[in-house]
Structure formats: structure tokens, C-alpha cells
Amino acid sequence: MNQTPLNIQSTTEVDLRGSARRKPGTRRVESVFEWVIGFSGILAIILVALIFVFLLRDALPVLKEQSLFKMLAGRNWYPLDHIFGFLPLILGSLLVTLGSIVISVPIGIAAAVYIGEIAPKRVREILKPGIEMVAAIPSVVVGFIGLVTLAPLLQKMLNLSSGTVALTGAIMLAFMALPTIVSIAEDALASVPKEYKSASLAMGATPWQTVWRVQLPAARSGVLAAVMLGIGRAIGETMTVLMVTGNAFAQVRSIGGHDAHVMPYTLFQSVRTMTATIAAEMGETVHYSQHYSTLFMLGLVLFLITFVINLVADIALHKVAHQ
Image 1 (cartoon, rainbow, N blue to C red):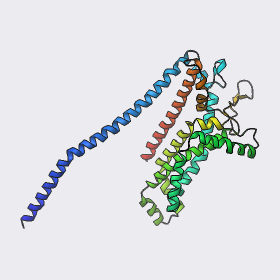
Image 2 (cartoon, one colour):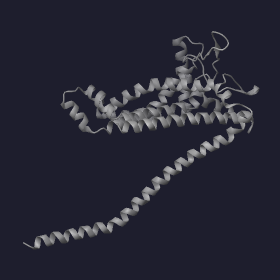
Image 3 (cartoon, rainbow, N blue to C red):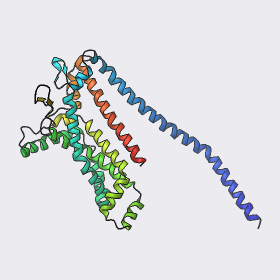
Image 4 (cartoon, rainbow, N blue to C red):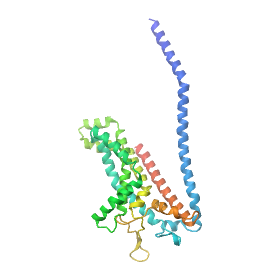
């Protein structure tokens, strides 16, 4: 009767000794991984700070000759006359980006729901890799497709003088942002516990009600991350918008007097974005000239806009996660 407890005690002691022997090695491995992860995070912050410093270094000289407010509010861009107005470029970038998001977000979330919840397994195994492969298409190839096929089609359908307009750029950017949105949103839906779906169906909800009222709200942080990454993908694109948006400045028209101005920006006219301007003019600019520094200032403005978008997305994700 007394031998069994002794045997159990001895076995327990052996297990404890074995785990004690393993703990130092395990702790070393864990400490190494913690150090690597921490170092990677610090390195990422340092790299972002260095990018900011690099842009700021070459952008500051232009402030000796131009006012920052004057550049941000300027409505004309004539480098030969040393007139640099950022407003048409900022509005052009926002117009094309917002147009692409309006197109890509509903389609992307609907596609993610179909792939994750509705499509048969065989169809899902074909669709998901196929959509992810679309992200590997070079942007210049997407630009060629838009220039050769979509631009003439829109010109004919909408009776436009030219098919290289903001709408063409928005559609092509939506095409490029879709793989990111679909992939991340589908992964977010897949991470929702299956018990949520089972409980909803058991209570009498239809499959559509379960997706709309249970699974999407539960995955809203991941879906929001997908949308914000799609916005980042669209606003930072260069070659596609350079090729299909016409690369022309929309003029500011005056109405109701000299002090009343409106930006007649629509999706059916040619626009020029910040990224396209930098790509088109940097190679022909004299280094360290006023034009050169202005392009760096434009890049700095784009960097800050992207940073603010990511910051807002991060704050929204943390708020959603704690709800």
C-alpha cells in the first residue's frame, strides 16, 4: 500500500528533474527569439526614421526660396517658372485612390466571403492561389493592360475625348488592391472561431445572416486592416497611374468672383498624382536645384500622408480589438 505513493513520488521527481534540465535550453531559445523580434521592431522604427531624415535633408533647401503653405495651397505647377503648387497633385492622388477604394473594398470583401464561406472546397483551392498570383503582376504590365484595353473602351462607352482619365486609373488601382484586400479579409474570416458560426446557425439564423451579423463583425479588425493596406497599395502606386491617368494637370476654375475657386476634379478627366510627378520629373532634374528639392518635399508630403493613414488605421484597429 505504501509503495504506490513512493513510486508516484519518484516518477514526479524524475519528471520535474527532466523539465528542469530542459528549461535552461528552452529559455535560451525563447530569449533569442525575443531578442530577434525586439531588434526587428527597433530596426523597422530606425529605418522609417532614416527615410524621413533622408527626405527632410533634401527637401529643406526649397523652404529658403518657397513658402511651405504657398506650395501646399498652390494651384499651378510650372517648374520652368519656379511655380510649384502641390494642391492639384494631392487632389489627383486622393481622387484616384478614393475611386479605387470605392470599387475594390465592396468587391474584395464580397470575394473574401465567397471564398471563405460559400465556395466549394475545389473552387476555393483554385480561386485563392489565383487571386494571390494577381498581386505578382508587375505594375507596368497592369498599366499596359489599362492603356491598351480599358482606356479605349471607356473612351468609347462614355464618349470621352481621351480614355486616359482618373476613372481608368481608379479601376486599375482597384484591380491591383483587390488581391491584398481579398487575401487578408479571407484570413480574418477564417480566424473567427467556428463556434460562433455553429451557435448562430443553431439559433435559427440563415447562412447570410450569420456571415453579415456574426462573422464579419467578429473579423472586423482584420477586415479593416485589409482595407487600410489596400489604400496604402493604391496611394503609393506609380507606374500604373503614370501610364493611364493622362498625366495632365486639371486647371482650377474661378466662379462667383475672383476669390471663389473650385477644383473641378472628376473621374472623367486627366489628372496627375504625386507619385507620377516624382517619377516623371526626377530623372530630368538638375541635382540639388530648386526643382530637385521640391520633388523631395513632395515625396515628404506623400510620406506623411501615408504615415497618417497607417497611424489612423493602427488606432482604429486597437479600438476595435478592445471593444
